[in-house]
Length: 162
Image (cartoon, rainbow, N blue to C red; front, side, top):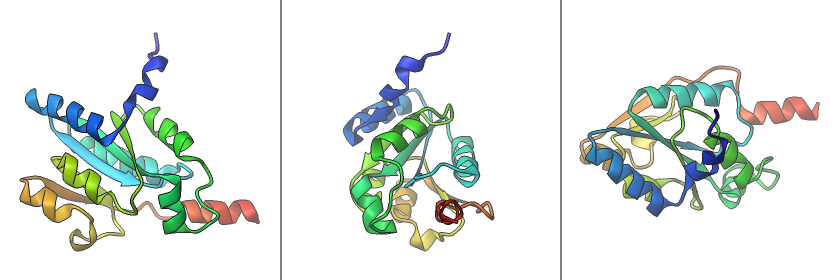
């Protein structure tokens, strides 16, 4: 039997995510964190999420809110609403928790949770990853995944427009 009813329960507030993470840590489990807009989910996103999930026992994914995406990507974005993007992400079996954040960066989310592993895509460096310094100072590690060439939401949108 599938546990479809539990999908929406994976979408938590920052406080709920911190409490869940604390419970996992009491049992000796590790937690990875990654984030993004995830506007139109594609192969590159799925690769990055799979790589992040390999790094720990549990995976928390931060998703930019609609207003945050607009500020970062422009007035025509996001294509899909916050609720839609969070629900799609929560449906992925590799994702244990989804947290939506309003800020332009997940700094507050990362520094509140202080995951064991912070994972970002290959277009970043350790110096440019928000929260990396704090995660490392807390004994955690930062992993940079390679980029899957040819996949980007912007390119998908441009292809659709043609």
